[in-house]
Length: 366
Image 1 (cartoon, one colour):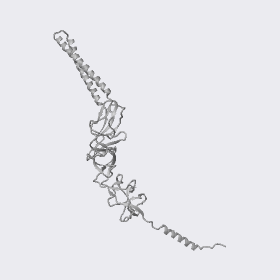
Image 2 (image 1 turned 60 degrees about the vertical axis):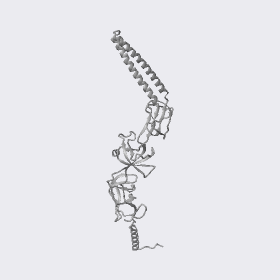
Image 3 (image 1 turned 180 degrees about the vertical axis):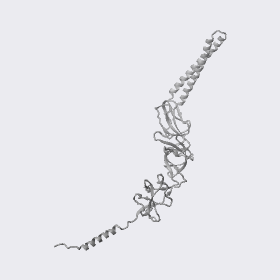
Image 4 (image 1 turned 90 degrees about the vertical axis):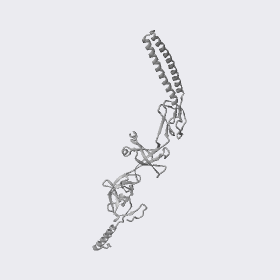
């Protein structure tokens, strides 16, 4: 039995109803996109630059012997406190004693030769006065006396040098302080000037940092800074740059900068890690925004600013002063009253209406 045929007019009406239903569903409004917003924060107190460093004594001595020899004893270890004049390391002094004895004997011999030359000179002077000897013979004795005197001076200098070298066998502290490094052990043969121990002098402490060559021109002696020890976060001490190295380190190509505590009585432990903070230009108004808020417009930094009346977002170009640990410091393009989108910036479109929330996911009412 053939299937019933649907009238053409009825089929057309059914199709039109279906299309109208689809069109109505497609044109239903979409809810506004939820976006996190916030006001920018004043950045007056943000540091312009932060450098890691290490606490050092202002004066440190790499002590070594003035003579070569074999170390016989070491009286200190790392961390030992010493007084000026204390013996730190000693060399085997037997060879120095023998050298001093030989020099002393040489001096005695030269003095004996001088006495003989003086006697000869006096005798020939008497004979020359009576014309028993010639002028040539008299001049020879005068020259012999002068040579004997020079030989005594030479022998005395050699004896003094040998005696001094005996004293150089003991390495002594040149100031009160603490031993921070030991680089030689008993039995080791050392050369003159070779560093054996490092002594950090008592007194003022400072932090040594390394500054890249493209930034070193911004820093000069006397410039204010702040020091914050890693062991004491949030506690900053006033400081000033004491010196800037005139030449870069050949390996790292950075410049060594010493930053001293303003309060010289401050006594952090040597070797502690610290941060040195330098402030920016406090006369300029700058704003701090999260890194997640940054977008781009035409290849330049930009932020989504919310129109408080319409809740529409508009992309505005901004000037970035610097990028820091806590966010981006903006120098122009926004103000204290601006509402900016701080998350999800890559999903927004120009003029889009948003549903704003704060960091605690609470709805924001403008």
